[in-house]
Picture (cartoon, chains in turn yellow, blue):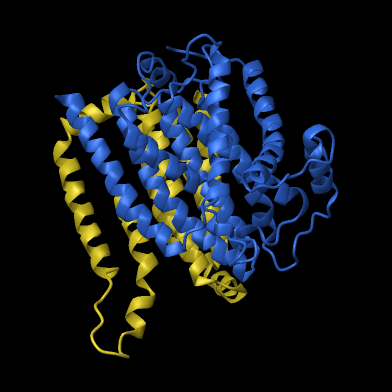
Length: 190
Length: 314
């Protein structure tokens, strides 16, 4: 299991680097999906199969599909890849790299001090996750529910079919709304 | 019931599934023929059963052409994704006591995860073809599959609430006395509809609606890559039938006959039902499909879950 953990972590890091350096948006998204899948494998190795599967269903299976959907609608051609290539000049990496290095040094220091408990393979069953969600952390669940409700109302408002006011003035309002509202809702739902 | 399958069993399940898929192509064409009052393929071999071999030879010897305007890597990966996700779904299906690949404690969710990843195959295939009809097919597939996935998951939660476990094996064991289709009838209906939409079979084959957008997402595919989409669709049909059998029709339980035969019979009956759907129903319009999903199926699934939960608690 420990080896599996390290392999999955390596894949996650490699895939994420590829996400940043791709110039073609859909290729970057594909690497992001791989990265999410490897994070799911990491969760599985750490004894959280429930979280691992939810990671795949929600992030890789729903949210990323919506991203790909938007990418397809944008219809980015070779010009955007060209533009992306210009934006990705090496000088842009310096700032983030320095800041991440600080975090890395901090992490290595903490592990060396033995402050972090590394790898405790106790498997957490779905039942225990549910019980703690609805007892200890019930406030968080309720708050998230309210947030989702706000999102749902907002999506409904945006996707609402406006009533016909006058003959000839409503051509633009009706075309876009049949598809957009369900898709927005899924994103908020999950 | 805890269970750990061996590699041999996994290979056997894989072989069984792979031999079933081409047979299904013949079965579908024959049954469609019968229901539409014609013969269907009946020339090659007894009852036309060697038509399968003729079809395979045809698909394998066709030129496997990648259009120059396509996005090569994505174009090649897309058909593989559907085969991979569908075959992975079979891993959690309990065929009979002791026959299966693995008993995950999140088995049901694993199936949902794999079916949601399967959407990428169609979406990316449509996008990478770089063809407006394929793109339209891919867009339709993305919104259709993501919508129907939502209440596909919700419709199964009734079963989970009643059993108290996500493990497919536990769910089958809990149906010893009564099949889940009786207390969970609405869950069963919603799951069946969502299942047909998830594997984009007729009448919900809107991503490839050949009367509107050529062949939708696989317009540009030929040869073996098209064959993989094709076989993937049939395997998807088998996997949805097998999962429905497991969750709602009591899995391998049944009198007189051995368990594996019962499982096979139930799955086969469901597959025939899917083919009958194709023979019997017209294809809805895209907006009809969406509003049907969100305005009828989702409330039904939610109400079913609510009532089931209330009954279990009281």
